[in-house]
Image 1 (cartoon, rainbow, N blue to C red):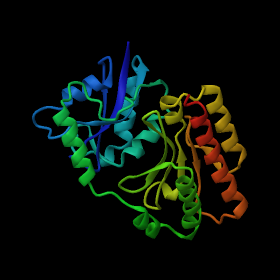
Image 2 (image 1 turned 45 degrees about the horizontal axis):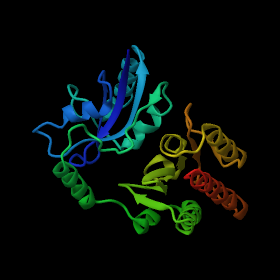
Image 3 (image 1 turned 120 degrees about the vertical axis):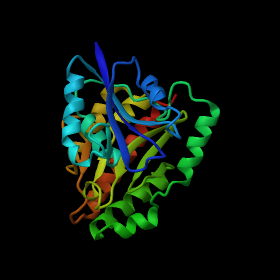
Length: 263
């Protein structure tokens, strides 16, 4: 019987993630159980993977050990981490991605619950473009200036997080992440792709996603980020105009594929 290993966040607990496992049929049910009277706001699901047999327990234990120094209480599954730190590891684990399309899709949420969560998130302190660029070195400024300019030109949605941003294509009401951009304080200022988001949320055929991955590798700018679908682009080096053109050209190709299959 498969179990689900999940990573949850809660807007009322910024900077803290819950890494757990459930035998429920879906992670939304577990999120509903965790949203008790002692928790002010519903949980959001960062990632959930359905894994067969004892492998789920082994993966949960491995994550708990890996992030042990960041554990807040040894009798609780809460860690002081950025959610992306766990997400990039769980993405490369075996199993099936069962992350809900809506991150706060908790079973039994009332409209008041959703409104309260939404309003609280709006008030949270997030970075912005000015603060982000102030944190970059000269190499990072060169790259991210081109990346964000391309995103704005192509009408992409830029979502700023606590440290970095995601570059998204809005398609049929869903936000499909093309890539994440980080500052030096998180993931060494690198860019990470999110082919899992393209596979999960868009109608681009899997074989076309594989082609997009091949295109990324052939630019010479990307390399695998672990054993999963996603790649990393190292920005902390000198870039020339040809390389910047390759990077933004690849981004444009991904956007075109997503929009091509909208209908």
